[in-house]
Structure formats: C-alpha cells, structure tokens
Amino acid sequence: MKRKTYIADPAGILQAQLDFLRHCPYWLSPAQRFLQVKYGGGIADARGSMAGNTYSRNRFGNYMRSRTKPINPRSSRQSAARILMMMLAEQWRESPMDDAKRLAWETYAKGVNWNNMLGETVTLTGYNMFIRSNAALLAAGGTLVTDGPPDIGLPPGDEDFAVVFNATTRKVSVTFDPDKDWAKETGAFLSVEIGRPQSATRNFFGTPYRNTGAIAGVDTTGVSSPQLLDPAFTLTPGQKIWARARIIRKDSRCSTHFLAKPVLVTGALYKLEVTGTLVPDMTGEYTAAGTLAEKTYYATSNKTYFIWWNDDDTSWYMTPILGAAGVLGHFTKAADPVTGEYILVLPAEGTPTVADIS
Image (cartoon, rainbow, N blue to C red):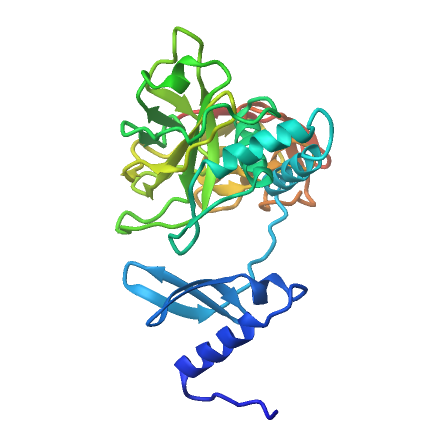
C-alpha cells in the first residue's frame, strides 16, 4: 500500500502518528512508544513524546512542540540517584525479600490510587511502589524497608509548609506543623526540594527541582519548627524560588509533593575576603557568583579570580580560571568549609587566608 504524505495538515499528521502508535511494536525506542493519549470527540488530550514531537499542556492550553533531547550532565548527584535505583531493583529479587514480602507490596500498591500525566487513575505495581518509597526514604537518610507498609494509603501533606531564603546566612528556613505524626516518629522525614532560582517577575514554575535536605522526626518529643537547611542552589537577593516537600514515614510510605508559596530571597550576597602576600595576587573580596559541581563558587568583581569546588579531589581551588588550574600556580584547601588557610601549588607563592565578611 502506498504511504500517504501529510504536508500542511497538522491534524492529519497527528492522526497518522496515533494510527502508527496503535500498531507500534514494543521494541521501538521509548521516544516512539511512550505517548499517552486520551480519546474523546476526536483527541481530548495527549501527553509525552512520539517520534520528533512532544505533547503537553500549560496554563494557556494544549500545545505541541519539537522534541529536544537534553544533554546528560553526568553529575555526582545524578550518578548517586542512578546507583540507588539499580540497588533497589536488585534488592527486589534478593534476600531478605521473598514472595510474602513482595505480595505485601503488591497489596499496598493496589490500595493506593495514582494519577498519570492525563489525570487518569492508574494502579502501580508492588515493584514500582517498593522502589518509589525506598528511594525517597534512603535519599532522606533513612534505612531500607523490605516489609510492605501495613497501612494502606499515602501520608497527607502539610498546609503549614513554608520557606524563607536568606542569602547572607546561606540558609533555608523551613516552617511546618510540628504536630504531624511524622515529626514524632524517629525514622520519618520531611524531605524538601527547591526549584532553580528565577527572576522576581516570573509567576509560574515547572522544573527543575533539587533536593535540599530532610528534617528528621524524633520519637515522643517531636521536632521543633522552623528548621534550617543548606540550599541546593546559590541564593541571590531578589530572586524568586519555589519549594516543595513530601512526608516520608518510617514504614516508607511517601506522600505526593506539596508546594510552598514562592518567595523572594532576602539578605545580601555572601562575601569572602582573601588576604596574604600572594603570587599571583588573588587577594580581595569575592562574592557568590553561581554554582559549579553542585556547590557555590565565588568570584572577584571583575571575574579575574575564582574560588570553586573541585569534585574530583574534594577540595576548594583558588584560580584565575573557573574550573581549571592556572599555569601560574594556584591555591587549594581540602574539604569544607570554604573559609580557612589555603596551601600553594607551584609556581604560586604565599599562604592565602579566606574569611567570611558577609
């Protein structure tokens, strides 16, 4: 049969792609397989990607755009998440997991309703729930749970959840309801994520979010509110940041994400001062200028010298080039904090001292 060619009819192109999807074999790439479509009078909704197109929805309605493949950052944070997922996938088949434990997870999963990208109710498998729950629990600092949760359902969110960001202290103040059950349970957590900072005029935000820490519950006495966490991004006064959280119980039951009201960063830029008799002369004031290797880096006002974290040897570097050692020598300091005395790397000369002058 001769294949039809669609040139100027977007609706026809979409229909052709959907007809293809109905007969799409399993072995094709995920980009061609994982498009979720809701049929109605015509097509009511579509989410996901197929071939070179991505279908989604924002506050203005449904839209279709060309599919883009993002660059793999291969960051240490990403690698740690992948290793965790691999470990949990293997744990599902290994001791102490057995048929009884797997059945308990299946029972739990069937009792929890879940919404897909189209807002339709679906049921996850026990394997899905085991990985989802334990991945969140382990990332928060908890321990692996192999027994299926005895209580069916997800923990409720927290309407009191709120955040305050301060660039001077470089801290996130997290407010929550201390009377929630998780707060009085050792082994339970409030896991907090913050979005990439945006301009003050932006009024909506989707992704990306990054884990910024977790607040641990305490048996009987509970944990007080608010609590301070270290931000996952550099804080710059005047920027707007969104935050979300989820509650993780000791038995690994994990709530869906709930949002805090977006707020502007307060305070002043964090400042460092470098002193000493140095060659090359890297003395002067440095201010927070961005993020490198998932840590804040600092720069002089004219961007001549930088202080940055080298993830390869877990050390702070003071160099004329961001992310690289200079041919004229540089200075280093092993481990956190960024302040303190640095040592020279030839042909540099001198012993710099870095102090907080915020």
